[in-house]
Length: 431
Image 1 (cartoon, helix red, strand yellow):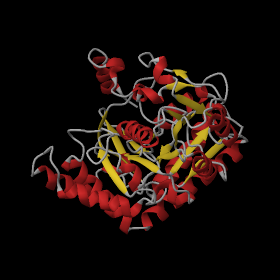
Image 2 (spheres, rainbow, N blue to C red; image 1 turned 90 degrees about the vertical axis):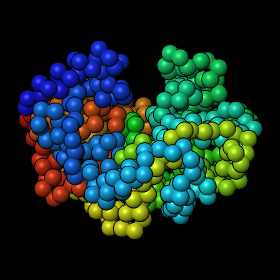
Image 3 (cartoon, rainbow, N blue to C red; image 1 turned 30 degrees about the vertical axis):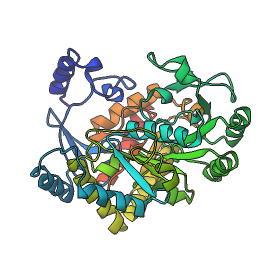
Image 4 (cartoon, helix red, strand yellow; image 1 turned 90 degrees about the horizontal axis):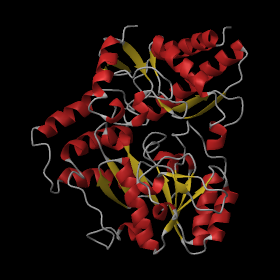
């Protein structure tokens, strides 16, 4: 497989872009080698600058749930471009997409559009603090909520301690208001709430984690969070930037039947365009400026091109339930194929999946939280990643990322993925 053009572009990029990329995971640091520079994509395939094609299992980290270059979404964007790229003023389409989101997502009675998932989560925490008059919030270890200062916090020394900055540039003052607990651990949450009475504004959690690999909530975990928040007067925030409109048209909260107070959205909501949103109960969202005292603004919020793409995407998902049926079937077929391959090879690795999200962890232990995920053999994953790439399968370049499937995958594509998985595992284990 020739990748000379990608190698040349990466070398060139490093002179003008930090690390040669505009988002760290793209640099292939955790798997080694040179990142592929993508030229185009269509359906279930991406094509790099050297002309190589790959079955796509990242889908722009989630947004391309219908596959790349969907004709209806592209048509909507082309139509919108003819009216200018940005107004910085209200448009009717903003109302249409807001009304559609409110009708689809159980927790949302009012919604504010922003430009990224990071903006959405930062704003949601600010609003929760303004609404409750409290400063602290609880973050779950291994859940990723964007690169806002408050979220780049490493674990402290125990369940009732505050976090510590996990990145230069994040101040200890910021970190002291961020409390941490392991995923799937209600006891740790209860200890934090008891140790910080009437000080915690919110708990923010990915209802299905996607940035420590795909990690599912144990039965009763999400409802347990709901109950604890009700007991202590805490705002429960589901970060559904990944799971929103992916697990069901109402997101993970509809899928699992647990309704948070607030939700953050992104990725799919923009049909591939840069976008984010946060919303929730009317009484909470009425604290947002100009209706309330909590300030948040954005020149490109509600951008007409993003709104055109997102509205088209959501209309498709809202009116075509067969989309989720196909995604569920595709996810089950791939999981079953992977499991059969592992059994045939005598390997005992862990597969976590739900709907169209799936991760093969290179560990024989259950993965229920970040500490479990870190037991994975990341060096072996690196070999697996490059082996799959050689077979024409494009995975996320990290053990700690979920794969995101799309409806564009054909039966032949699925068979190719399963066969490649088997052959690569066989080769890297010398079986």
